[in-house]
Amino acid sequence: MKLRLLSVGKDKGETLALSEEYAARIARFAEIEIIELKASDPAREAAALLEKSLKGELWALDQRGTELSSEELAKRISPLRSGSLTLCIGGDEGLHPDVRARAKLVWSLSKLTLPHRLARVLVLEQIYRSFEIIRGAPYHK
Image 1 (cartoon, helix red, strand yellow):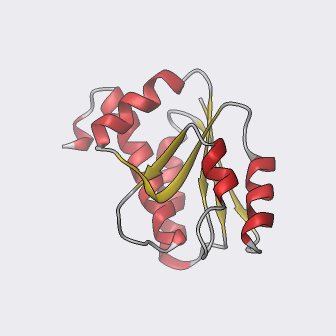
Image 2 (tube, helix red, strand yellow):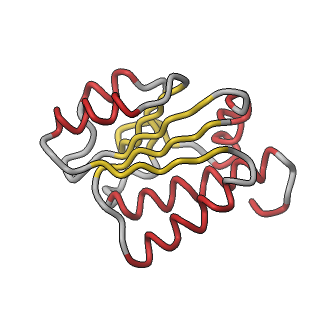
């Protein structure tokens, strides 16, 4: 599987270290790439996110999306393991409607508004957890 996480804004500090840790764990299961995009107006951010998306499935992270359990997420990821998945995290103003409209899944981590740096860590941890669930490991319990 090819996995690309696109995120508007620069990560640093402790959240960067956690993102790198989970990306390294995911790399045992999938080819992963994290791309940080420069913050701009929402329309330019949308164009940059869509331009950098892989040809496979696109998921948008947005609090108005569908909340999933870890097991539900694993079921959605499992059939994609032979393809590619792009995950998009917007900037301070959220994702432009164009990105949400193109997404196969609009995924909500929570009804809470989260800083994109923290959302990135949560997304990576849940993707890693999904791979562990798929392989039947006890990590997810």
